[in-house]
Length: 226
Ligand SMILES: [Fe+2]
Image (tube, rainbow, N blue to C red):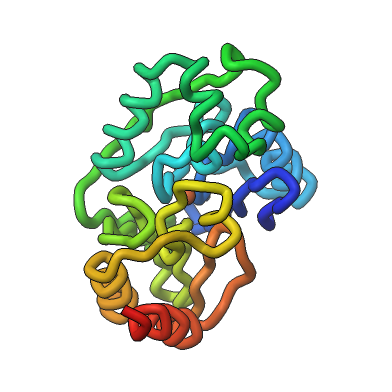
């Protein structure tokens, strides 16, 4: 399901093997997940058995309590969600990115309406899921966006879901518009991980799919500015 820029909702991915379906990200809220599942039902597709989180940011994880089946995240994402779970909802509601960032408040009428759940399964570094005639590989990689990025790769299709991993760090509304603040070493490490994986198509959660070549050359352009 494509991203919805009016609510800063990321895309929700769906990967179907002959045995099970895997979703990419749990979305912003139960409303976001309900919309996704109603689209799957309309298309006659089974609900996902597994949902992989690309990272802990609210728009990718706060719908977790409403998912069907089990969820998977890397250990760092799990840790960030434990922190969010233990934080006051009032603080979370008013401090996510900045006071001016209104998308969280558009999704949730009040602090109490935010429900945070923890992933059922956690992994470190790498995990392979056999979806039935279709491999789905999860890679935990360094990223300029967060310290908890998971990339979801379907080798037979050459498709790589990267979450927000190619964006810079977002600390303000300005960063959201500019694509974020980049730090050289994490950007270098991310480009190197992208090259190692060898995908053909890269899908960023808030943008249109692009070729891996285009993505790498865009990121190398940013790197050249350091
Ligand atoms: Fe993010």
